[in-house]
Image (cartoon, rainbow, N blue to C red; front, side, top):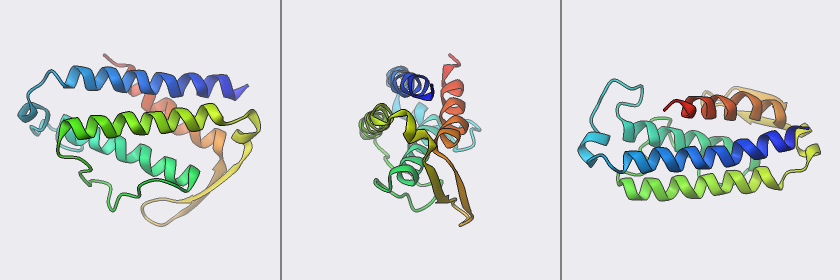
Length: 141
């Protein structure tokens, strides 16, 4: 029951990111990087943070992948490099999600947040609280 829903979200996530990055590519670099009052400063800073958040969650879930040093770390100064990394992470997310069977969503995930606090929750509920929020945020156009 959860699998088709999450498969769809994984593909939607990839599509929305492609669309956002395609639109952002039309902006000059200095405009993407200009501080405009966003929590991570600029459009570029926000894209970096969203990529990092996905990397953090995928590492928590799979035990593999990059582990950023801090939450405001700039992963890629160059937009083309950031866009490439975003596409690679979206592929990794989609491959993982579509490779899960229904029982995979019942697996208990144990992880520590950036403050070191330990959490345990079923993968299905962890995915339900993070991915749809990000997807819903990206639906705004």
